[in-house]
Length: 93
Image 1 (spheres, helix red, strand yellow):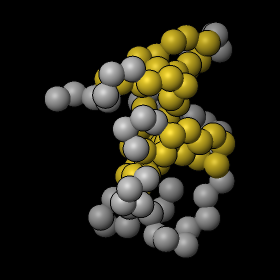
Image 2 (cartoon, rainbow, N blue to C red; image 1 turned 90 degrees about the vertical axis):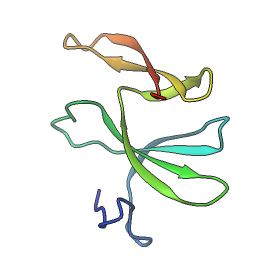
Image 3 (cartoon, rainbow, N blue to C red; image 1 turned 30 degrees about the vertical axis):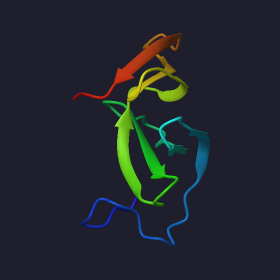
Image 4 (cartoon, rainbow, N blue to C red; image 1 turned 45 degrees about the horizontal axis):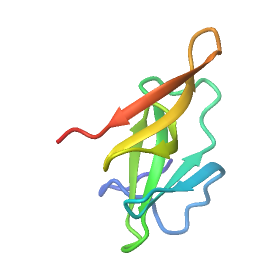
């Protein structure tokens, strides 16, 4: 994704989207189409605040499919054998 110096996307940048989900904390999670070689360290996601429209580029070990306590997401990811595994991601602090 083309990021400016403030860590956000330019308003007119087209984005190919693979998946999208809204969480109970007021954010829309957007999963862009990932590079074919994969991303080490997680998936690159765009989180957009429903209330403010602010977009933040972040990484997650898996794209959210369910949400737990505030800041906790659950999703599936693939291991080296391409088997689906459950991933839990909890925000620090």
